[in-house]
Image (cartoon, rainbow, N blue to C red; front, side):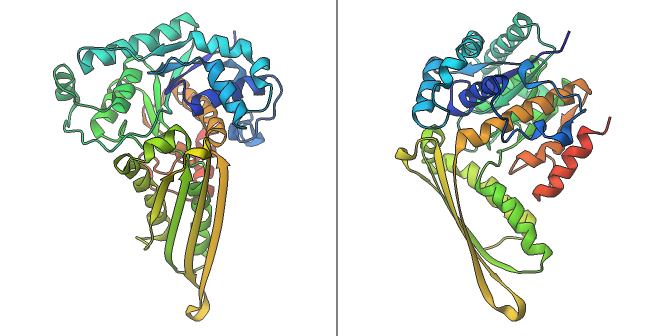
Length: 374
């Protein structure tokens, strides 16, 4: 029997999750898998689970049916016309696996109840493995005060010790699932959360997927350094709508995103470069985003020059194929018995855990080395 892998999505009724579920179904019906890196010839023979063997479920505080979310995305041009009718059966299957976030008297109980939901999903669908992926809205930074697992376990019984993203990560680990954070939220940033994963002998990865402007930066910045062209300033303005845009309209929430964006340039250019990153919410943009960057650099004999680029894209459509890649790769890590951080997934992230490599081509090479290591 061919194996089946569960993909548990935190934020399961949001635009990214809905596009992921709908996109996987569309590919199964013959749509081209554009953007799904693991479908390329370089990954052939790696033993990745086929896309049509992924089973979707997840937690979300909302109860809007997936079919309604798909209709909205079709109307907004994110998904192709008439797709909702073609994939109705797949949407219904995923809908049966979605659970409203439970209510609990303590965070300890909340972790247990969420883990029970994930375990029930695995048993109900006869799954070999489950990968949990956080695609919920970005949280503001959160200071976690606990340094060891035992102390944190006790604190969860009486305190609001962790933000929702970290609670989700612990629930995944308690359910025996791998965990990947697609966002810049706190989740697996604290060492104590990572230690919990290692205690459970499970892999984790992230954070903050690069789908647009930062993806371009991770290609352009090495160009300047390898050609010995000093960069004097690099600024960017990001305009986005949708739920994530509304969340990032709060400067406190946007802080997490800005930090991870700026870290890419600092690492690739060998130090801090003057410039500002702006994230502005423009409601009519919906699921679309625009980024404009201005780079000031100098050439031979100090001649000043500039480079400017504009990136326009649909955030959910850019993100969804990466979610599919991360689900397949993390499932492979589970099958190989990998424990702890997955730095080889850095190709997909602005702020890859336990990795300081940000150049896209080198990250890709690292990913391929790991995939074909066995």
